[in-house]
Image (cartoon, rainbow, N blue to C red):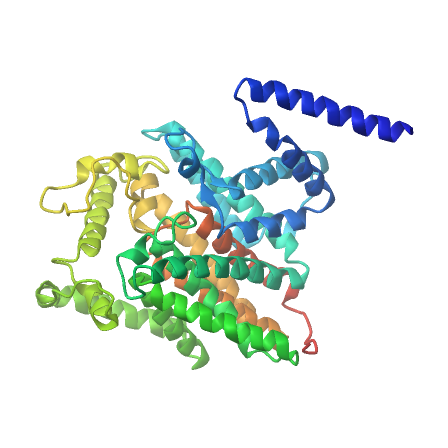
Length: 478
């Protein structure tokens, strides 16, 4: 028998013996050791495959506390342990090599991210719950490192940008079929069932709807681009139709609203309307609202349409702020965030602490039938008011700076790209990203892998377009 075979059998027997010993003492996690070793080996050999694997598993990930109720530490499995491993490997690689593309490190979007992360770090020290805040910071770091910095290098190879989108889309199709098969058992027009049939892959229908709309725009790009491959074109048409139907059956009003806003932005860009005119018009609408706010509020209070399976009533219920529990609870959370900000306007209460601290800021007349005293039903319902309450005014402004620089980069690529392919693809990535940040006015999911992976990934795509592909020449369609 050769030495290699002897070594192989010896290691195998030792591992089996260790496994038996640990299992005898009810410690089952040792069984994950081969998976961890395989991950480490693959990471050193081919990190790009690990990153794309994370993208694929993100829509299918489930929460650890769904498997082990009452566990003190919650993670999305298998994505967040993989992201943590990637983060650790990145730090080691950076310490050993000390090399990273300076065009990415010094990009305006990267600088905006540094400012935001720095302020999260500072306010973690001043936090009312430092343990929660540093955990929040660590989570944000592993998402940013893997899905922004490393993904930007991954996207240096153009085909990986398309792979990223398709990996998430294909995985999301599995969730779509699972969700709608379950929904059909309760009736496809059952709006209330649509909220929880997405479990355990999504916590509720709002984040599910947000991701469907976000990826609808890249899908539309794949649909309209020149492609002589009949099979791929037909497949894309089918997938696009599946997504449209899924968006309707998600009964997610905020997602529908963000979709309409994305289409509106597409029209504005195609008509070459200057952004400053749009901003002036938006400012005019805001001023008009404040001038006529009494009449507007009276009109909203007369709206008694409840969310339901009937499409028209579900749309009308968006403006119901008197009897629709979902809308009223969202306003309650916003008011809590603003009251928290007023008490700690500079430092905030600490990153990730809103859901633990907002309860005393609920007033009795704002409470709804779905209000809770236990911080177990979500957060501030806003990507902007959440940081405002948790990290103060600088926290919100630094996050908005990241958003602004990402869109500024995207617009620069769209206007300056030499290739129509890059020009069009960047446009639909911008539109997909815009739907998330518009949706972010009404909900926030950036603390979850479901949203963080695609959001930071889309931002990385825009930076990669800007750094590596803006001068790319036209290629022949397949």
